[in-house]
Amino acid sequence: MYIPKYFEFEDEAEKIAFMKQYSFATIVTTKAGFPIATQLPFLVTESDGKVVLSAHFALANEQTGYIEENTSLVIFSEPHAYISPAHYDRVESVPTWDYIAVHAYGKAKIVGDEDAKLKALEQMILFYEPGYLQQWNKLSDKFKRGMIRGIVMFDLEVSDLQGQKKISQNKTEVERERIAAHLEKSDMSSEKVIAEFIRKG
Image (cartoon, rainbow, N blue to C red; front, side, top):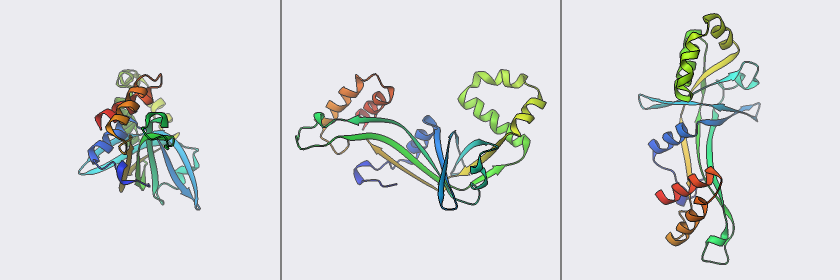
């Protein structure tokens, strides 16, 4: 990831928290030198100093055949906002975009054991919709095991974590205040979130 010095996202814990908050991400893997990608909900966990991203593909997804032999890139990117030059003091200014993104790299390992797959699905339910767990527990074992045979579960241990937080840090305090005040009035939730990040610094 190209990261200008102004926009370095250095805090590891903050990057991990960002991935957990914006966990619907894109995993990119190469197939014979050509990139292939899938959008997936991820479960982000930490253990013994390691960060692991867990998710699952549909069985028919060809990307499953390449995630163990190649390094994959998982892109977490959600809040963003157009920034008009009208907010700047200098007339000779250009439009830009504020955004936050984290890139996680690593090789994935496919989870083949059915019991492990069921446990992983339950962990995802607990993260995304704890209230559904009661209904899930009432489903028959036959149904559950039939369902998991149609997916490919994997764990990706992160080998490199890069982030960029571009929130107008290269502008003056007055300009940043002007931008934040404008974005706070937006009807778009992502722009309101960027305003919060700008105010936090």
